[in-house]
Image 1 (cartoon, rainbow, N blue to C red):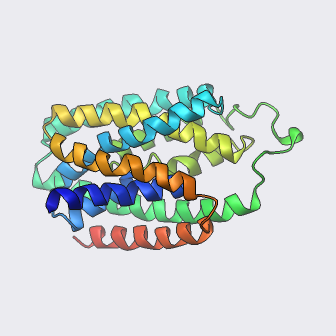
Image 2 (cartoon, rainbow, N blue to C red):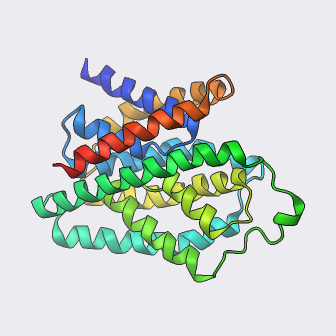
Length: 263
């Protein structure tokens, strides 16, 4: 029965990802901790590879449609990947199962979920007021950031956050890109965020695997449910009120964040 429960959890998260594009880590990690009683380090490590698997298919489709601005992805990765490696080294030296490290993980995860809740709600409001394609006058040099250092600095922050919590490469990443690349249309911001999340979560996930904090059998069960869930969700996108779904999701994430901060 537990095997079925894991697959159903993957199906639910995949469905939400397909409907809203919100990163699976913001949902799957708290589900594994609260509903299945997993240790935070195992939940985070397993979820990182889960996120890499779920986002890979989406990035391939976006790449085929030529909607990914690889310059933006590369600029963010210049900060996120090195920060991810440094964080993995710190976890290796301190010990991922160390109680103090576990406390830091749960506290940081709680803060990350609260930030994701705010970013998810903001994105829902923004997507209703922003046209899918920005006017030509506003798209001059859209891949030029406000300052050359901003993508690297914000990328480093996201890389550290994702490695510690498995959360941050979704809604928070979109919000960061909206601030750093204000002239980039929202649809291309989302595409760049998904593409950037794939190498980041893959590197972080493999690093956690090296630390022994990945449950491979569990990962297979989650992916077995999530992949069809994403397909179903993507086909229901235009039939369900996305704004309402994102609003409810932000409340759920905020609730999970407050519970983790209370641990």
